[in-house]
Amino acid sequence: MFEFSNYVDISSSVGAFTNNVSVYYYEPKFTTFVAVCAKNQVNLVQWDAKMGHIKTDIYQIREKDDDAPEIVIQAKLVAPTDRNLPVLVITTLLHVRIYDIKTQKVLLSIMPETPKPLPLNDDDDSDELPPVIELYHISRGITCVDNTILIGKHNGAITVVQCSDTNVALKNPLTAHDYPIVALATCAYDHITVSADVNGSVNVWSRNLQKVTKRISTGLCISALNILRKHALCGTFQGQILLFSVQTGELVAEVTAHSREVSAISVAPESAYMLTASYDGTICIWKLHTRRPEAFNVEFRHCEKLENQMITGAHFLNGRGNGFAATTYDYARIAIFRIGRKLAA
Image 1 (cartoon, rainbow, N blue to C red):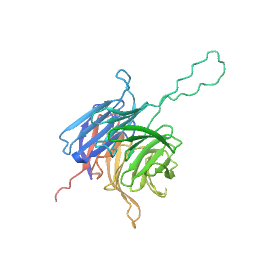
Image 2: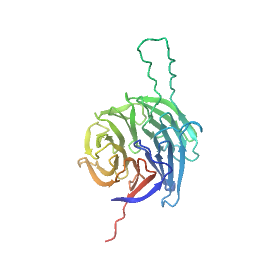
Image 3: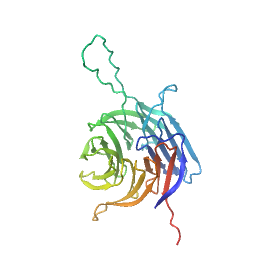
Image 4: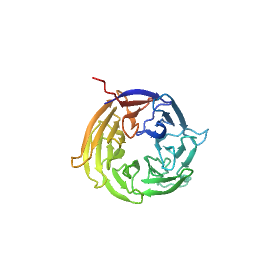
């Protein structure tokens, strides 16, 4: 079904964090944008329909030129409705930054306030330990609803950023989780947003993000999340894919897809395809059958095995799902796969 097409080289080796590749297809100009996380930088690659011209922009992540580079956690291309081009959201151990991909300028930088450590008292003979100071505020999970960008935080809150064509502003956070956020996902067709935390809780949000319409307890540690055809797709550290109805919260299917942690889940809404990638070196393509009165069904379509490579990210190239990009740890390249053409009989 799918076959290897080509490699696209990037300037630095891919980092170890999961879900570290993001793709946006800009249909008016048939341009594909791909953001890939290295350890201390993000490579933003773009190409045209024929891949005749490939351009790469490098985002070095540091506060000042003389500062040590920061460790990148995640990067995602999101498209607020009031903007012509997507913006690039990058989270690190210290910051959240939003970039204009045309100018590479920082539109917004968010840095949590870290309390200063208390001075040590040499005369204090008690055994009481000083209070723990959190040096890192990891943000993980990025999505966009209309003109609102959502970013998960280490304390269970969700950062809210409101965008317009000329302005980006920080708003009050959403609070519905008690544990660190691990992933966020939005279905633009059904106007449904889901969030998941490390405790295995999945929340389904209303379109205006004012309330949680359904709370789902999976009982498992979630490593990846997406949404397709009104079903939350949850990947686990055991390699399973759990599919829950966002309307009833019911577990409708459980797929033992991989032998190790699921590192990414991507969807193609136009074809109902689901892509799952894992540290075990495999990428699987599935098709969801949700039309009634037929029974709900998850159909296996294809599998790619990348020998001796740990897949950290994979993403469909467009909403049709006729190709996908994959990244593997410590390799300075993006692997492109496309649906093969049928040979004439």
